[in-house]
Image (cartoon, rainbow, N blue to C red; front, side, top):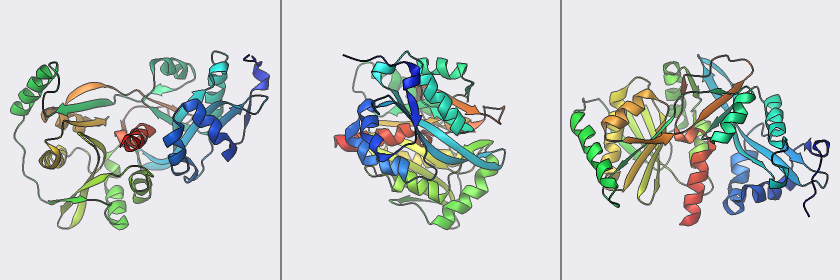
Length: 335
């Protein structure tokens, strides 16, 4: 029999390793989640998730966090991605989810979440979270697998015909299995920060943790160099017949650089069944559309901030939140 505990019997406790099994059981993805747990959470500085337990010390509610540095109008400050929010089935519809989010907001002054459900949006709005702007998922197919793909392919061809001209740029493309040198990445990150109103800091420390240290997945890197200087960097994940553009470090308002990077991706992976990219960046979305990519849906992005009254203007790519790292882990486990 499931005991129904009153709210006072559900309390917040400091996180410890003894909670991992309880959390992964609630999440329902214990196999790969336990493998990536330490890398995703505990190896990061200032990891302090929200843990609620019942009178039997069983995990009743959990909200993980991934601390990051962000740039807001040129000022670098701390923030955190909210991830792996879960409430025990026996405690749902009793205010436990709200209790978890209130504890999260008390712990972190700026929290972000990408790819949230309709039901979660309603709750977050009531708790002071604001819409952070449009994030679109785009994709392009290379061939027909189903009859419904015919219309999609025809629209792609029309877009590619209308926007087939690409201006030349200076520089050389280089495919890499590892990130460029730390000094190069950090220099480029510092150089391009003024181009973006709000973004996650993509320095070497962050990109190295995010893409090179993933316990299960491997990524490819496409570098654009101008007179040997790193001018832009694209991060891709190849999963059998699906190639995902997951991150971009480079100048803002430079559509031609994006076009040339995308063209180089086409040369290497154009025969794969699907290319996809998720972004809030207007320049990326325009370049993708002109290259035959079509929207497949929106990713809801919401932010809670005690100090920032403005929530729009964020530059986001799929690799920013936990969705991509989980997708990469699941893909690796299937192989």
